[in-house]
Length: 416
Ligand code: 0WD
Ligand code: CA
Image 1 (cartoon, rainbow, N blue to C red):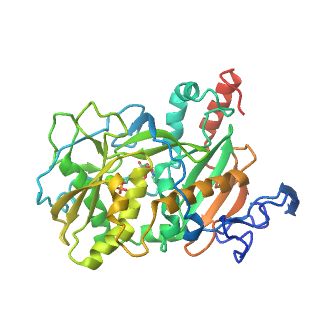
Image 2: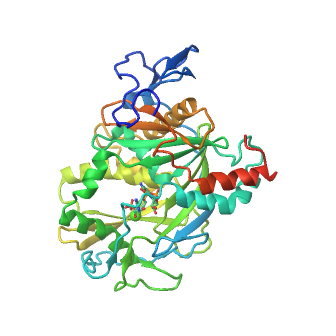
Image 3: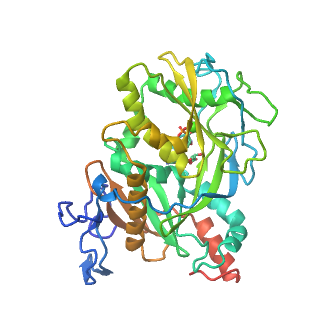
């Protein structure tokens, strides 16, 4: 790692975050000075050193966010094998109003859980890119960089960025590498997240299953099929959409897991997709307020990003019985929360994400798949970064880098 230690600690700070000279922008730290700074024997152009996450800084007009366009999809089967097709796409089957589903059913005898210790990084998306790059390039032929996009990442990472100005519990670590003119962003599990994951209670583990069981009750494998409520729940299986869009001047390519689609074949993707959720039943005004303030923020951010228009929510009691099913339209959520005092605002989420991506662009200048800038954030702090050359943080695999390089060396299109 540059700047000192070779065994990096996530708390490595490049600069203390006590600057007070930011008013209108979240950036700070020598940001517009063009002098060069020396550090660890190397010379770097001056770049902003941190980014504030204070909400007020992002309360401006809603940034441009282009309607996301689906450019492809892929499936992961019961053994987590990649397929460049929609074999895992499921169809929504409307349940009754109070369906009485038991979400506990099958937890002990019909549940195969994905191994969360296996870190896949961006690998499935990269595989999709390799198998579809010609299509992508022809779509973005006017661009100067190889893929024609500024960023490649998972939708889930962008969701975390959108909710950052309101998050008070969990920090994040995002690794970024520039290759062929595109910046790839891949999450690194924080120590705190690993500790939480390894110390889940039995009750918590079971409750994590409930969301997947709810999906099984209302999804069919075929357009005219019925849900197989007695089948095995296998969380290795996934159908992912790949969408392209633009946030301000950032061209984005990202993928997100989609639970199911509407049966009507006339509705194009991603408008046909439906997100499924479970949540504790709401019995008091306080619970309703918390649902609006915390849960709807996460639900909105996750579905708004890929242009998924609706969420079907199963409300369940303490024993995992679904007592009500409700539909939430993403376009109505900001209306729903308007009456909450001091509530979250979509514009703050999107402006923060846009400014974060600008911050990343200004920091990650060197095109080098083995160089990682690790962006780090803890609640109540600024976003900071550290630099790691050829370390365990390098995440773009050789099979991807080599294949892309030989493809472009073969004359397909120049890299940058
Ligand atoms: O390894 C990692 N750190 C991550 C891997 C973090 C986030 C995602 N992933 C992978 C998984 O392979 C998953 O198939 O990305 C895929 C989904 O990506 P996403 O859509 O960008 O993730 P997100 O929006 O956070 O989650 C969507 C759904 C979840 O649904 P709910 O309704 O609970 O939000 O994907 C599932 C989950 O069903 N999911 C995962 N599945 C497997 N491994 C994971 C995960 N780590 N995270 C979420
Ligand atoms: Ca879901």
